[in-house]
View 1: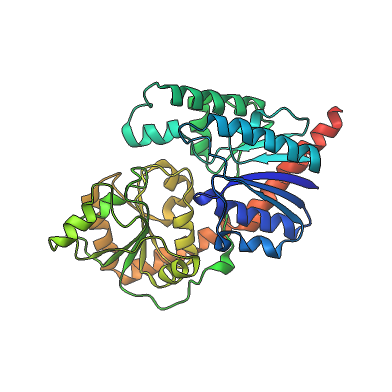
View 2: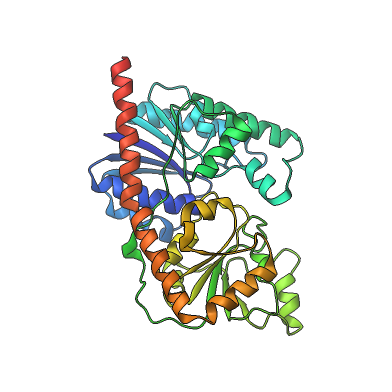
Length: 368
């Protein structure tokens, strides 16, 4: 089976792509991979060197959620059509909405990782105001979804958002994201600090909940080093936020080390269609303290501890509760690890996609 997969190199979709493509290659699939957004660094793309059955076409075309992207989208679609004509894959797996509307004969899957409208509503409580950009964006998304043979989302919550804002798909499925457990170490001795991953400027990640001088535990925030307003730098210069250390972006090895020795993970997001960072923390042996949003409840059930939705004081009290109870901390670490290994492995994710691939190709052959 030959599958063409699109990806972008900005954010978690690239990590998802690496896990999926690696697993599909291991079971014998031929993959043509096309990426957009920016040309990946050597560190980002070196995993492809170990996969000889993967043909890779990196590009720097702008992504569909970016403003002023329409010209790039049209050019990238033509580029993609040329690759499809040349390589003749059996199936198309698009990780962007726009390409679902490409004019070609192969069956196609469109994966709804996230979208602008649901992000905006989660952050602002209303849909985004009408503008040329947002109207064009919504039109692009809806057109790609209509043409798809199958819509996949990483959670039921995200699938529901697609139906709410763009119309109910004719065929849809949930496939949870997965990570390779071998990339993480849950057995290292723990140190007395919490960790969180999130950009301070991204209101969806809501890392600003950690901008408090009453944190009960030393806390490391991995992400942008200061907010646009300079809140962190200003507060620290005045002697506040003594227990918060913002370390900026980390390499994969640095992040693995931080997660493997942290005593807990703080999942502060108010918008999170899946959330790879909490999964990575769970596979590293961290208990999860999560914002009480529908996505985290769907994914982690009773195997995480929740603080009152978007409430920084509740977050502080929950950290305090877990930090003061080593037995509870250990119990939730084991529960999160067990759930992560059972439900969110890269092997399980790949097998789910493989089942959908076979079903679509079989249906296409039967209809011919």
